Image 1: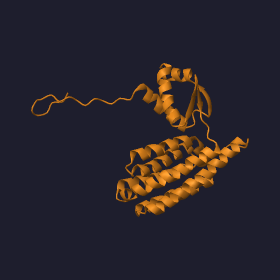
Image 2: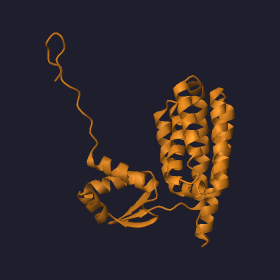
Image 3: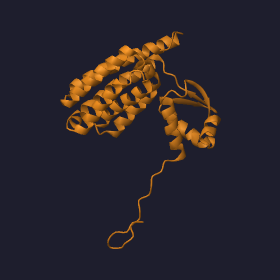
Image 4: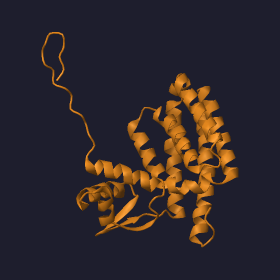
Length: 233
């Protein structure tokens, strides 16, 4: 309760706490994105033991992950889905349309937001220092892109983009560990930032589309080599 000047009691707003399935869902989603669970089977019981809960909230969390295409439920077993090359290319085709649209929609807002522009520039500088630290580079790279997309002010669009990123993110380790691709990516980040400073959404979107296409080719090559028994890297 709070006490305004007239002495009347005002009910406090309820605190919106996450449910147990929400907590499990968010943690498993992060784990899948980081590649903690490799493609293949998992069992529900060990997951329930890990979180100290029954199987019910774990199943509820897994159904949400299944709806996003990240896992498949089969009786008492979960299968972490692996992407085929064709599935990867489909995801990147969708990403190219959604992400370039988001950038164009937010370009004018970003141009007038000096704090956001400075934050984006700081992230690019940070990524320059992370060439040999893939985990840090991936985190900064995701924040750079998502801050651009969120500027569109379209939460549903941001949610769709986020789901597609989660599906691909484990494979991006192939991309971020390639030195030539790393340097090309950084140049494209700088080019996008320059376009956004000028409020030129079309130029920024063109660079972003090229950026995604180059990423797609590197990651697809890694998946193809892995499926044919070649070296991962």
